[in-house]
Image (cartoon, rainbow, N blue to C red; front, side, top):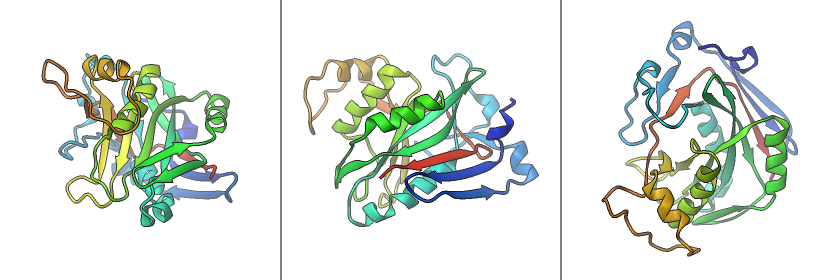
Length: 235
């Protein structure tokens, strides 16, 4: 698979209003030859890119693991205060695959179990200017385990209703069993439950009648060590 040359070579840019910071990671030849593996947040195993199922109804998404690591570093100050941090993930589409190349950290109001963006217009201006899809979101659970709360599920519904490939990244640094999870609502069961749920705040959701879960681990997301990405920290 060919990528635009501008998106080869790992690069990080932290942008306005913060000072610009660029970082280039050297990738060995061996890593370049096998730089794509499936991300499985359920058991931590990986599969080769060629094992991707062509029968899936959603497109594959590529993401750099470094993006998640950098986000966790930028969230460190909040994490130490037991405050959540959130961000929006933008991707470009090429030959049927979505490549996640932009992380936007908006101005936000945070608590120990919630985080709300306060300048969504700025976020979508960045996405629109770069012709990017809002294909996911990322947030921390500073002192909780790695799971999707009822509030998280409603947020995920709003993304997944727009773009079927959209998913949520949860980073839980204190969870010793699983510190990172990539989740999406099940279709159609989980999506239907959230679509028909009128409640707000934290509340329980009933399980689908057929016994399937409301949300699941992503099976269409691949770690790509060669992706360059930018970070816009607007706080």
